[in-house]
Image 1 (cartoon, rainbow, N blue to C red):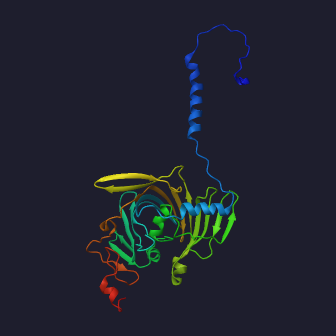
Image 2 (cartoon, rainbow, N blue to C red):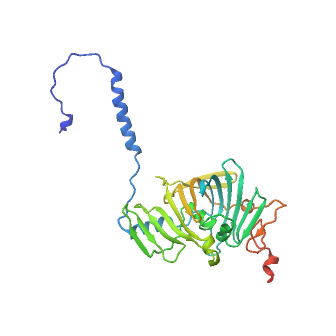
Image 3 (tube, helix red, strand yellow):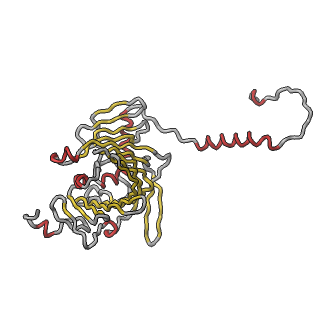
Length: 334
């Protein structure tokens, strides 16, 4: 049966005229554009109609460890603090916490550069805390607590470099508890989950169970709470349509690259931190590595003229972050 729209209709015969071949091009181009746009349309996001289901999807996608021990990432940070602003380039690399039997603590390096190429700082978090070197001042500092050490140095980090490295690679396990204490349904289809006794106080998931916002309070010893503590917020945006995390393996001089299926990870983070600090962090690249970094790649070495200052009074070997054996064995050590 021929549809009505395709049936011939009776028309008056018109004088035959020479066809104009170029007259049909606009219509053909329009049709091609419509077909192309339809093929490139974004896939519809899944939608979860109750909080428990959204939470379970989040657990399965974002409370999981990265499928490789090491990583490297590059970010750009637009930073404002009061009347000051700066654009900073950040290089992250290192190894995640290896949990389970025989676990190995994380070792994370972060180098910060000005957008003009000058070195601003070099940080290392290892088993014994945080070490920081400022090349322009030729000064270096160490502290056993990576969060408190960063706050004493004026860096408004809400959690450690190791936690931040995991977060950049879609792992919220050490930040978000396994169970929530309260939940609120929001008008846009999102859910806000609350946690009573955790450093993260709320986590908002969109209707596709992707992180939208995370809030909390910087945890520092009580004597520093007023001066160095404070509430913080991270907003997540720019999720890709397809997985964008890759794993590389280099052996015998050859490098193999594999793209892995992971829950979507935000490409932009907006940070609102204690002390009026704000930042827009854009992840330019991130990559997992199947082989750990060589020890010298994550070491932090000082010029001979620089003597590190221990902010907590405990002497450390700058290169590895370890407390020297002579200090560990001495009960009279400061």
